[in-house]
Amino acid sequence: DAGVIQSPRHEVTEMGQEVTLRCKPISGHNSLFWYRQTMMRGLELLIYFNNNVPIDDSGMPEDRFSAKMPNASFSTLKIQPSEPRDSAVYFCASTFGLARGDTQYFGPGTRLTVL
Amino acid sequence: QQQVKQSPQSLIVQKGGIPIINCAYENTAFDYFPWYQQFPGKGPALLIAIRPDVSEKKEGRFTISFNKSAKQFSLHIMDSQPGDSATYFCAAVKGGATNKLIFGTGTLLAVQP
Image 1: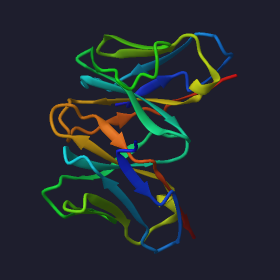
Image 2: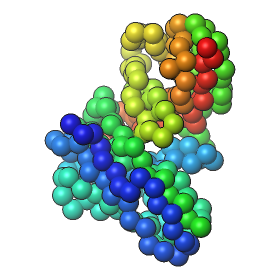
Image 3: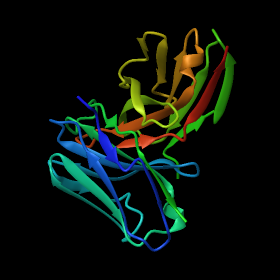
């Protein structure tokens, strides 16, 4: 299996622009997580889905952030409008289920820079 | 408020040494404690995990020690190698069907040859 696939790997944009990050989970996994990693705040869970349904979006920082999972093999995280403080590495992870022993497999991340 | 506190922030050891990374938590609802390893430019990857009904778990050179009464757990890396140089994150998960990872702040480990 190719693992979790994220695109783009790097994104540089200007403040105010819309940014869309993409994730393809491992085939057969039914849960998907979006994380943000910064030096200041570490790894933070933004939102997660189970069977394509958002379960917990309490980590989404504000209304500028939105996430969708239209089908089992694709998810997007959108930031509109983007701000310099959104600069971070965004990770997507997938897992077979929501039991606490189910390993989360992380993608390689998207490094976002907002100028 | 940091729900999982991790220390030290960084650690340098010589090859063959035994680095120890410590984590502490307050919420007794946590009942699963994984450790993740992250290399530069990569996503975190599960290294080893423990449930609170055991005090120690070993997988190869990696050992988790767990002290339920103190609400503390630690990662020991035996016979450390330069290839172990990475950032290590402890995490905690609450009971129930959530699998929601709460990460510690991370420890940057450098193993010198």
